[in-house]
Amino acid sequence: MPFAMVLALAFTAQQTGRPAMTPPTQHAETVTVAPFGLMPDGKAVEVYTLTNARGMQVRAITYGAIIQAIRVPDRSGRLADVTLGYDSLPGYLGDSPYFGAVVGRYANRIARGRFTLEGRTYRLATNNGPNSLHGGVKGFDKVLWRARSFQRGDSVGVTFEHTSPDGDEGYPGALRVSVTYTLTPANDLVVDYTATTDQPTPVNLSQHSYFNLAGEGSGDILKHMLTINADRYTPVDSTLIPTGELASVAGTPFDFRKPTAVGARIGQPDTQLRYGKGYDHNFVLNRNGTGLVHAAHVLDPASGRTLDISTTEPGVQFYSGNFLDGTIRGKSGHVYGHRSAIVLETQHFPDSPNHPNFPSTILEPGRELRSRTVFAFGVAR
Image (cartoon, rainbow, N blue to C red):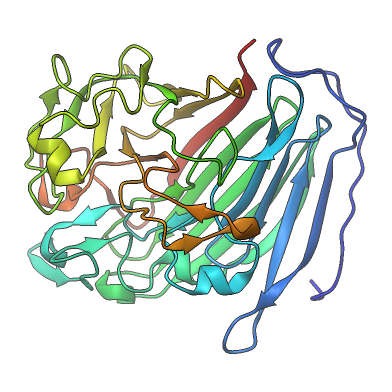
């Protein structure tokens, strides 16, 4: 696709969507593509903008398959960007904490940057203390993906593709990966992942958007009300590696089975909260089968914006923005202070290759990984 080419696809809007949403406005579904800067080697980065008939907008760039912005209405119909990030490419090329990125080949941590597969020990890049995090030094968040836009009825989207070579960051096998973002008329953002390999290899893909439903740059998320569909979680050691236990959330600060303010118990004298400097833990989702299951619900009481997350994955990592410290200046010059976002990463469990009791993340040749997560935005009246 030519660098400066702009696509404008207009389709007939259908008056559909959940009852609680703001009534549809007069828009047409569109996909546009435009320049978003140059990589240090001169390669072009593009931004794809998806807009639905209600005016909801999702912007994603080819660098890192990053979701750069999500604009959704509040209870009065006012649009705001609810994801942290940067206005331009240099921010993402700098020391970005995975704002909006697809993380892999293995999302989350692998202990000591090593695992054993079929009798062979593989050593990975360590970039998080003694551990490997989100694929290593140059994970999927730091590569340029190929992209193509599409229309499917009254939904619009973009598919990003990347091939990770054998030995990439220490992982075995050549891995072909795609991630597709689809924006529906109901203000749902559907994220589909696929992957194939020519050698057995661990794969764990996730979307790492930082959400503040009041609007990015509007303060902390401690009053956001959170519900997580999980009776158990995976406690960690001091380096945030799971101990292997699947512990009950009952009677702990990790019990979000009923709507609870993020900040309600975050300061309690709990060893796990001390290790994570707040919440940075994997929750074991309650499920009976392999299809989509409701994972989490988030409500910002002030704006009325809601977010419901459903997934085919077995877990969700809840991170309460503990390491945001006011040193990052993001979109429109906003300073991102302590706990100014919530991250809910649907994924397999951390360090699964080293825990036989965890659901397996090993992808075999001849098999295709398929995973789906749905981010459904709405409003509470």
